Length: 114
Image 1 (spheres, one colour):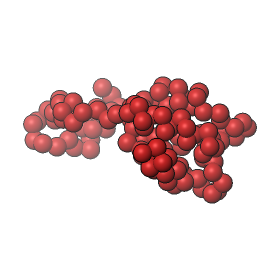
Image 2 (cartoon, rainbow, N blue to C red; image 1 turned 90 degrees about the horizontal axis):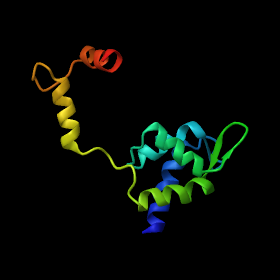
Image 3 (cartoon, rainbow, N blue to C red; image 1 turned 90 degrees about the vertical axis):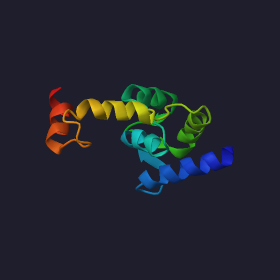
């Protein structure tokens, strides 16, 4: 199981490893974690980064530092997605006309003004 998880993490990491040198920009870590089915908020991403040695200057993360931390996250089932019923309830609250969709304009308004 651990080997499968590590392979999955390595594959996700390699998508963002543009130089193919087993490093990624620290700003990519949140995307990598989310691509693995975990959905931490930004504060939780920063907590993860505190556990990973980030190479300065430049802010790069090595796979060998990321792998054990992310393996533990997946084994512990941390940062699971929000349940569908909660998301549906939030959508219904935004769908003021009860038409089953939200227009782009309404979504922009809700995200920027409310």
